[in-house]
Length: 184
Image 1: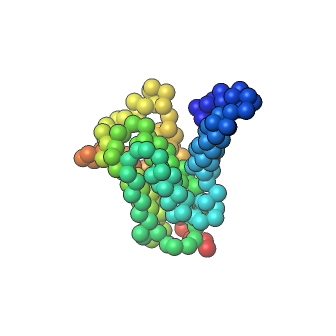
Image 2: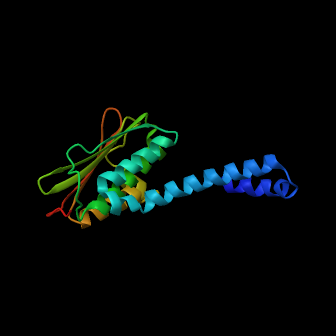
Image 3: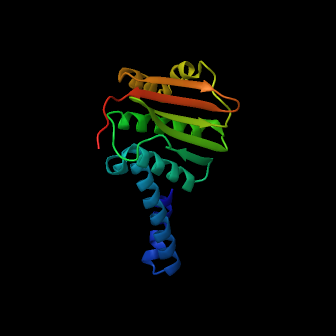
């Protein structure tokens, strides 16, 4: 929508309108910021640079900058440095769970927790929204929505565990996977 607005202002810019130039510049600046956020969320360079904790923190920060629920991020039991073979899987699953909260939950709060216990790495996304029924994943597939089912299949194919359960209020999605060794 920002690009469309900028294009509409181009005629006035060509006619020499300083106001139109400012509006077009502002619209293109907003479009650029949104595009950067989308690209960062889809393939975060920060995942390679700062690890899973940094990438999830950036995801939480990006959501917090937009309108929507208040985001709470906790990586208290995650090692400060290092990475695992599960980082991208956990990140992409968390991103999908967060997207579902933003689209469907009507939540006021969103929690993203990252942790490790022994050889297992896990991420938990929970909210205080409308909740999810136990058979919601099956119904979403029947209606052509494959995000949650695809996420579950990917996690399980990688030897991980996926659970989505209603809470009172809201929903909790937890993804875990054994990672073996940690790298620095």
